[in-house]
Image (cartoon, rainbow, N blue to C red; front, side):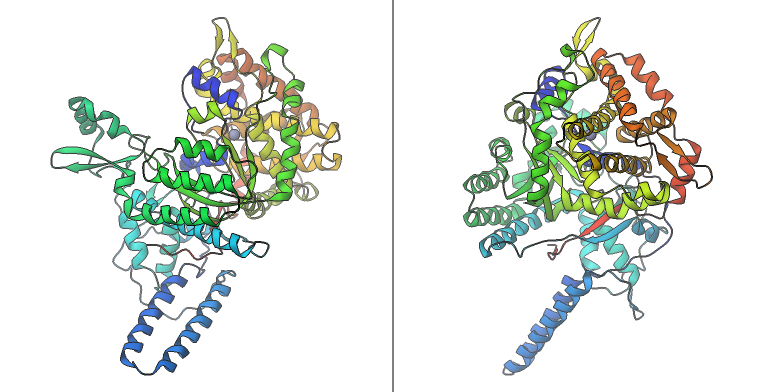
Length: 639
Ligand SMILES: [Zn+2]
């Protein structure tokens, strides 16, 4: 939820439409992942494959040199290599543990976290589907070029994040020892030696993570940095620039632009993007790819971002930039490269059209005074439901986003709005491997069966849309005030809760009008409650957790979510939900409209704690994975 600060920027964000950063945002709050998993090592061989093929090629080259004239021998070996690599590829989907011969570990000299297997078990390996069959040969070639470009950004990301970790990752390639394979898999999940879902705790060695990662000299202290900036005011802008790395040069601190520091990998990325542009049949997308290629070489993303948010329902799209500042805990300003190849999910995108069409009407229907719900007519911003066959950089490591809202540049928000992207295949994976298993443990079985990927997607879409609904300003005794300034630190939780509840309110409104099927409504409620159980597993310290435990406790107090003492399962009173949702929507919208900080703080204090019985129920489900580890159908070599 990287939002522009200040009143004007807040207004622009609201005008632009929607402000939620959704699950991507959660990645800044990974310290709150509290659930423990049973020790259950998961072995799979997907990323062992490239290493083994590499070793085999070296073997091949060696033997060919020895037997220069025996070409038939080489051809035979190539055939064997091809068959082996195919069977390895086929094998990677199953991710089954296999009996390993005792293998030499390469990591016996390293201190590895004792709970590595338990940490690994929190991530369910899921092979992400990639439907290339319906594409033309040209489209397949273009996607291959986009993937190639993403792989170059992956190479940069590791060098921003943890170059020593990358070295270790490369060294472990091809090792058959289970300890090495597990460590390598966890390195890939985290893009470093630091556990992204456990407060960056090191899982190799004992040295704590450098807060500036490799974006700053590892021994640089805040005190030294501030002293240096005070003594060299002319260098301040460059040192704070989101697109520079800070290095020592003698006694000086030097800011090196990303397009200089990472040129070695940016050049192939640029070439791949331009090749993809030449293969694209969509002139607007091709134009964007060329502009984005130029941006990579200047670190100026404005023109290409503008072209990106102006794409209209593209069949293919990419996220491809250093946008987020998740890696920089030193200044919180340096961006890390992230990338994803996106392919439009036609059926789901059409459903989104229904939601978007009625955004202004839903705004007008909200239980608020007319002056507190400014018209939303003419304020549509782009939304895409996409499948993602390939991710790289900060979109690949740690917590997997199911929705995103980019770019972060407020100037783009002002001119065009930001783009909301729903990652359908990632959402399905989360629902199937995390939300549904948790719901099946906690909800009455017939209601758990109502929760679904479809319901979760609908609720998530309406959540994102609802960030842009409600009042644009608070009306306080001091006059019109920015809502966030009026509310203060409780604002983030309030805003998330408003998005959830106004979203549910909007779904019911669409059902009542016949724009959504009536029989789906209970599924939306069940999916929402299932989503609450999932979020609360991460604790209630960050905004989404605070919002959702409040919603749970409010629903409990109204009696629309109840625990059956005999079965221990929660039951939703489906008939009572619409009134409870409307009442809560009214309360939250009024809190924003009045900017009444004391009212908000009292409300969240009243409904803010996790009931003991819920904590126990979640503990009993702690063996359910926390997230998925996406295994791409496309090989993931690392340079
Ligand atoms: Zn949100």
